Image (cartoon, rainbow, N blue to C red; front, side, top):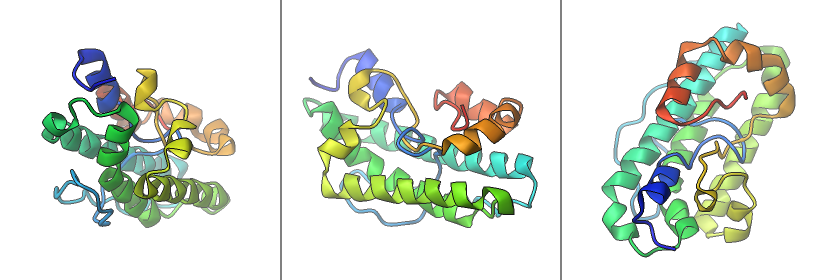
Length: 188
């Protein structure tokens, strides 16, 4: 399958964040691989103890990651022509996931959400390790890789966080902006 048609291009553009774990964002971690972005990371400040501020920070991180992925994908589109969609995704997603992890690590969740937040970061690190290792099996096991034609966040938010914060996320501007951009809502 090659990466030329509008549907595949659309699915690639929408193919990052928050499904293998749950958030997308921007960073300064050097993840290696060709096609990495040199765009400066957007700083995500530590969230105060409130759940609204936490949700805003996570969605902001996810939106930065998604925007970085889209920018890198478009900048490298010519080099992806004819490439298997999963391989193309793995090539482009490394740097944005590094950004996401860095931003998630800066967020200070409310005390009762810390365990779920730590799981989210661990899952993102596991996915980044799979991307760096070229582990197609792990990447293809995600719900919503580019091959499916449907964008799904590639970072999964633990179910307890979704249950607790899903309603809040439906009303928060950073989450609404991420959805409008095509990146979904990590808490849904």
